Image (cartoon, rainbow, N blue to C red; front, side):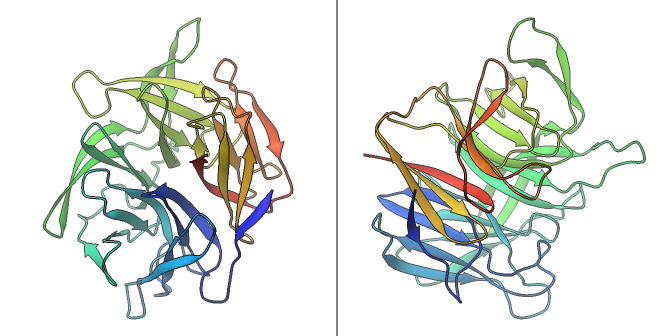
Length: 307
């Protein structure tokens, strides 16, 4: 394990990591409130694969109601703009970044019906998805609101179309196939698996949801209970390469190997749950998570750099 990008006084507490366009993008949360109400900024940095800073952007703050606690971040494969979501617990803010520009563009989001914020962003089959985090639960502890949306941007304004509600039912990923409830009280990270399905992490609910034909009339959902809260999950795209891992308590690290298994996902287990933090593999047959990298204080975001 090697330190790629150390934290500093102006960019610290890394969360989201993206490898796109030959560059490594890191969202630094700094010390900011998860609802943005402290009016403080986060920092987004674009880096060479050597860890050298290419460019950085400050998002949010300092006026009232403008804070940014960055979380989800992805590159739009069509426009090559980088989308950055802030404030997963409430008062969400969305920005797009043109790597050639020195400023970010804020996108106006509609009022969140679930009362919380938005967490991650993912692009699939010409559509963009965001998940609704920190929902207000009813007296029975259930989420009755949409947990996943399609998002469309027109100019600088976003519109949302519900895709999946909390409390919906799916089927188990593995035989014997049976119906299973998806509470979705804590939608978190999203990723794309090798089969092209959208995979949504229900962190506190300890489930991975495999959504086939997401956002279409033919959408189906299979569920894998994993028995522990997880954060980012990534499938290696080649046997040789480096996992890029953001340790929220320190900096951004790489773990390199020529023995990655492309069909086996790797996942981050953060320390703000009920377990000791680690990065491990997920068995898609049993849901068992096996640690393979230990020693980080609080791993969160991950990306894969093929070699």
